[in-house]
Length: 114
Length: 113
Image (cartoon, rainbow over all chains, first blue to last red; front, side, top):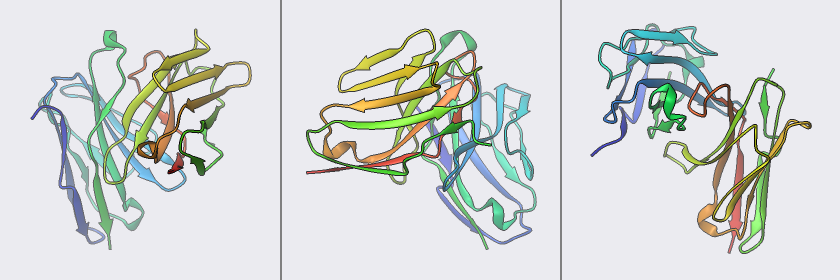
């Protein structure tokens, strides 16, 4: 099925552990994004990528690492999880700069850090 | 400081009536404004957008109005339906509708039958 998928949908882990959230899209979109959603803040951009091997920081990048070796995948890693990173994480993608199309979002990963 | 604000966390409307959701922004560089709708346990879904060269954009029951001088936009839903009950996020970007988005905190709309 075409689209953007995130895995896992739910994850519980402990402080200090490393955890990786996966994002896969089948549209061959150039741009991919990671956001986190917290009450009262809406969604905030963590990192984004304009193409394979090109990534850049968003508004709240501290404590997160991303990579993009293939166009279709954009994993987000918390190298040493903290309770403040408990959140719902959304991945999004869009086409190239000339398309002027909105971002499309996955269904999110709910991450709880104990 | 939040650059995009939705000052009403919730709104309750009777089925068939108009729903008006409001959004304010502070960054004059924003030139695209979008509304996303979100159901529980799902990702945000794009609803409608407007560029800064326009003051109104309409799509079926949904209309977005932009007042650049006041840095204010609103989403009108007419008539409101129970299936419209969701959280609505206002978002803004610079240069392209698909660029990095700055979101408001969201407004939960409840449409009562």
